[in-house]
Length: 174
Image (cartoon, rainbow, N blue to C red; front, side, top):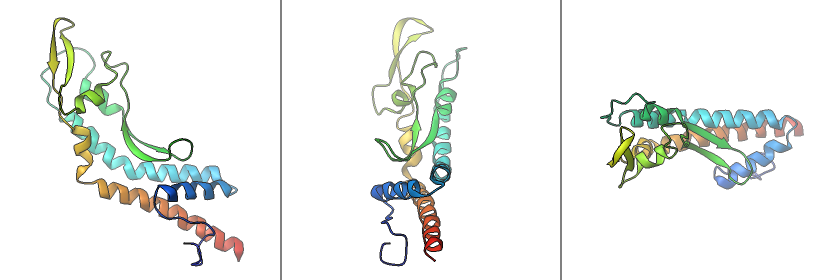
């Protein structure tokens, strides 16, 4: 964008573009509010993907009749969009967080998504051990068809913030 009447910084919509956008936001007087707006817009762009992942895990079959907390519902509660602007990692993603309080099974999202192996569990809390299988790749499949749509929505929110900063730069220079 530099040299075309735009802002005095390079804002391509790439990982480097996101870093440049965050640097430009920091230079603004109300940079903290702008960062919050950008993060909120990026999270909102990823919410449909998170909803698809939650729906996918809830569709996993269940043969249990236990009285403990529901495995599928517990995993679904821990799926959410995450945006970080700065630090060691910068970007936007949908993440299935660990579930430490769910039946002493903190890695439930990862284990139920595995291609093979499943996870070992006791039968009704006692011996013998058995291997359970989850719905394979439920998390990955939730994003397969719409990955480009979600990526485009995140990029659109970045471009909207870049345009907002560019209009401020033009107003400041006028």
